[in-house]
Length: 203
Image (cartoon, rainbow, N blue to C red):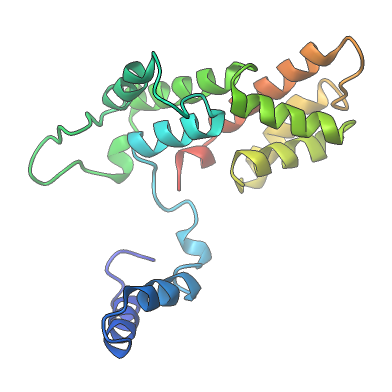
């Protein structure tokens, strides 16, 4: 929903009043509305550092329980410009393009790529296992399946073509006996390219 869309706000207010202040009705109205599902809202909001970090950690499933290293993960948000529980002013953090500058963007991409680079992390292993079960996979199927398992993540055609160019260098994705490690590494490298994409930086 675009910020301060008067028509959308009126629809939600009307639903709220008609349902005698039942928030479930408001949420149902919102989620089923055309303005909520509008194409112009796709990739319209840059992920905050917290959203990026937590989303990536959830993808790799590395911290399902507290363990050593969790503090370092939390500090990543600070390095990207969002010091948790310490906003710069009473206005809270600014959002949008302010999350993306030359320093923060490099930090965001490096963090996400580093997380999916480890083929032993449970979430990465799960993606590899799903691809292995479906192999052999053409470059097109490999890219599409990875995008679906990461998100699902819709990408622009230029992004998809760049991902395909990489996968085509190695041909079909096959997990032949004795070559599982090499195939897993290819998947990891493809995942690194996906999380480095413009689309992964947006909601």
